[in-house]
Amino acid sequence: MIIASDGNAGPATAAYCGKAGLDCFVMMPADTLVEGNVQTILYGAELILVEKSTVSDCIDMIMDLSESSSWTHLTTASSVNPYHFEGTKTIAFEIAEDLGWNTPDWVIVAVRGADYSCYLEGLFGDNGAGIITDLPRSLAVQAEGCAPLVKAFKEHNPKIQRWEEPSTLA
Image (cartoon, rainbow, N blue to C red):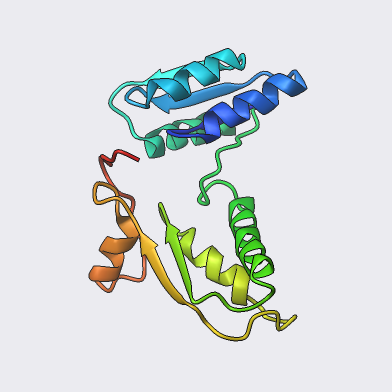
């Protein structure tokens, strides 16, 4: 197994792989918080720190490696993992269920890229069941140092562009 991460996904994958007895490689930018590095190592994964890189760079490297190897790429980014969207939709269903299947007044979501739309898709997509009929007010929040969705919105650009050199405290 191999995953690119700059947060919780790497250590979590390392933990699950360790429990299952699977080999795991976690590729992270070298400036990732040390806590994630330590957790990854303690769970028994091989940690690969990449100097002067972003998690997107790590994803690109793994994509290149995965094409010529038998590694299973577990990165959770929606550009790599189509199941990411489905998992995010589940959160919307859980919100609705917790509210007794009533429409929330607001949906406020911290987002990295395109995952914001998944919350609304989970609540209203296909709407075949008619579970929720009214649209809540919604707010997407991004860190100023990595805000591709905000940038696209302000520029009226329907395509979200890769954010070069992200810098956040998140």
